[in-house]
Image (tube, rainbow, N blue to C red):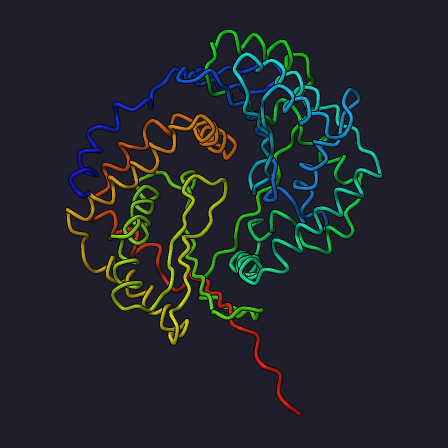
Length: 441
């Protein structure tokens, strides 16, 4: 396996990283990115609006997600649900999602049906009709979705309260689905105002990946989107996180048979740094700890010390706002969460004190590169990576420099970032524990 991974480092540049990609800016401010991929006669169309929960504020949290639902409830031309019915009747599929930094709408369809998608998407950019009955139904659906996905799931509630503890002023403390009290009091006018403010060509990027000719796509996009008037988009005021100078801890009780531990260290994103080396080193460091069967968490914590049933890391180097480097896991039977926390910290301490051996570093870098590059083999995932980067304020061409950046990470870089960012003063810890038994009278 090691030999195969090392060979992949030399082979990966031969994969279609540098496929023909064209960027075009319409006069109304809308950005178009077309990436030609002629391996199959299909196309992926994704429109990304730079609006999500990190743009929201108290009182209207969840409005971006509610608006996503309303985008399927009809326009002056279409009845509720008709958008998706038309796409399905033409052999395609469609859906949408809302995140902290963006809301995106997508279709997968035969390449010769692309214009249909563009026509429908251009219509609902500015022409969604808000009807009280439809809004009330969708708001009820979202509230039920929150009950099902968050309120009835102890780990989801833990993560929600964990982020609200880790961040005091950053909008990252706001859950994407919104707080239930805000959802109970959200008005249709709140969603309609949000739509008129943010759903505009000069706040959108259209990403097209598939069996298309970029010149023809530009002409079609100009035809359907070119006459849509831009809005006066005022960027939200910055809500910079208050500097953390001490460890924060919470305990959450829930209906669970197993404890669960989450640790988060404040960590930068690319736009925070003059020198981007740190974020690539943190990306590789994440792979050292949580890169599969041979990674340190699996080898040392799951199999070696047997202190965890599962353990993993998470880090978003290309997010819009600075976030967290996460470590999370479930203690093994008979192991306390405190013991697992000590084991996590011991792994981090080892990275600070001892340089990673060359063989291990090369293996992990090969894994990190392979995972990223092979993910681009899917047209949909390729469009996703382009859209996420652009919507978070980055140049999509970072995709093409990623491999070289990861290759350049050295053992000294791993030590440096471990020492810089894994400090208790930057740490928030959350424990999920079974609900205590009620005391007998």
